[in-house]
Image (cartoon, rainbow over all chains, first blue to last red; front, side):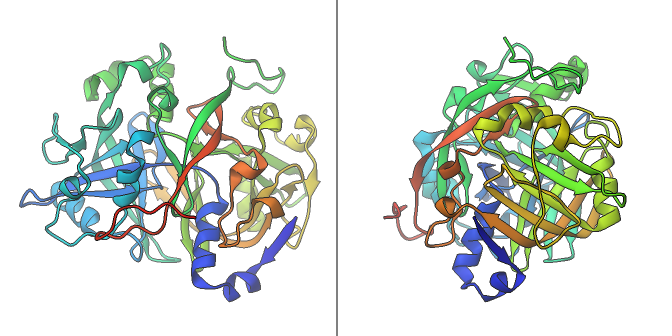
Amino acid sequence: MLRFGEEDFKNWERFYRANFFNSLGGFKSLNLLGTQNKKGVTNLATFFSAIHVGANPPLAAILFRPHTVPRHSLENLRETGYFTLNSMPVSKVEQAHQASAKYEEGQSEFKALGLTEQYESFAKAPYVLESAIKFCLKLREEHLIEANQTILVVGEIVEAIVSEEALSADGHVEHTAVNNLLVNGLETYYTANVQKRFEYARPETKPKVKQ
Amino acid sequence: MLRFGEEDFKNWERFYRANFFNSLGGFKSLNLLGTQNKKGVTNLATFFSAIHVGANPPLAAILFRPHTVPRHSLENLRETGYFTLNSMPVSKVEQAHQASAKYEEGQSEFKALGLTEQYESFAKAPYVLESAIKFCLKLREEHLIEANQTILVVGEIVEAIVSEEALSADGHVEHTAVNNLLVNGLETYYTANVQKRFEYARPETKPKVKQ
């Protein structure tokens, strides 16, 4: 085992350090964040940081890192109050990665990437038609992380669009059913295989595999 | 495609809703959070919400959900100022799941689960010996999410312990090299396969596969 401490972290070359800390924490979901500005110019950005915040009310959060992510998405969702998160299948891995490129303002990533805008109940945020599991959020809160000036944006999920084959009878949304991507680090993309599905864990019993 | 809105979300049965929103956002890293209290009683809890916050200084965050996660971990890390995040291999999937059971105060999950405490530079937080990629964090900030009273805890990474076989020459930590688990929903565990590794994305070029 290799052990690294604060002195190592300070002395590492910048890209080595970025690769290390972006991948240390493990696998993440991959989402394209869809927004548009007041003029109707749409924007897509790759996000690796969506987290579940709660089920009732349904809440999710994403983190905006000022130095690495174009800020158009943040400006847009502040303007309109809405944004979408769109998972992507392995067949669209090139487009998912390319969405992290820094396109200029006024240029829509949808067109540049060959992806299709889709509008449902909340017309102020575009979905990605090619995504089989996606949801729309309404901006609820922002929190400034003082340690590095990143911004946590919390949204309430106001609509969800899910491919029928991915939805289990108990409500579980199975991303492997639509060959969805996951990611780690700055540029490594993965698919997943189910290993185990358990019943709810209790201290007095051993883990039970779900039938 | 199935479309659901706010009326559906309100009317769903509680467990269906929990399953749906815990899995909608996609795959997550799985970590066991290691802490101890002032008396030296250790605690492990399963966490699905670790996110990368920044590389310089190295920061990560986790979300505490008051109603679903035992609060011992939060109380402990407030007492000592330190906590560890420990990824887990597929060979320990039963223990990883069982760590989400609500054990009583004063009972260490290490012993109940048959996992081994490991102490390195920061003796106030136990690592899991069986974990091949793990790190220790110092508490930096807490943010209360007003929408549902969850708490985002931001920590600075002060030590990282990584199996040599997982560390690439460019700093990328490859969790598949040590068969690490990922998770989605409340109880479904996965392993991953690398699909693509790209060069940094630029608007003027097509995605290039990394050699």
